[in-house]
Image 1: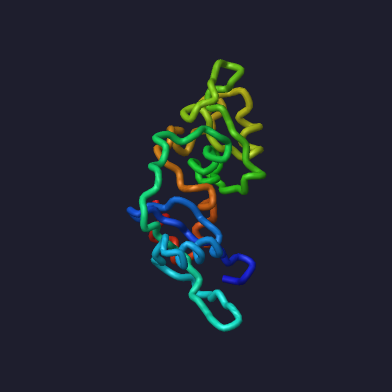
Image 2 (image 1 turned 30 degrees about the horizontal axis):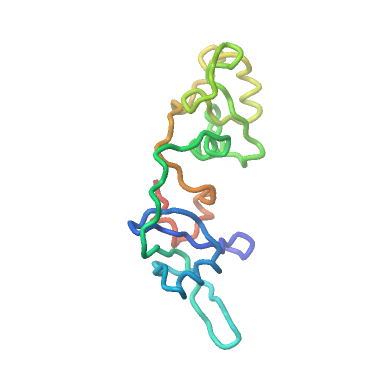
Length: 174
């Protein structure tokens, strides 16, 4: 992996080893020095000062409990993209967020609501092709029925599998 694709953040786990966030390595390093986290694994690179070298923290675990996650996932464009793994639910191709749209399975012009069970990720060409039809009418079957997610990985986990740091993979596998 070259330096342009190297992830320099640190995965933060809760007390029970569940992923919470990706934080800057500087914050993780300070939390370690303050005794608030334990380092679970390290990046291959080092933090260097004038006189010392420290292994860069890749994954850290909080030593104290934090507030529980909300019992629901807020509906948003970004969360729909995360639920659908940035894949068009019609053609199955993966796109960056700038090339994705939201599609109402039952079109709004026909009474469809903007809800988790009626909205999917679609690329522009598929969304235009489907238009005001249902997937059946457009002969464009959905790859998966849309559902309300119980939990989504934090936004920073939008990295493609091959770009995930090796140290994070055990904690983020679905």
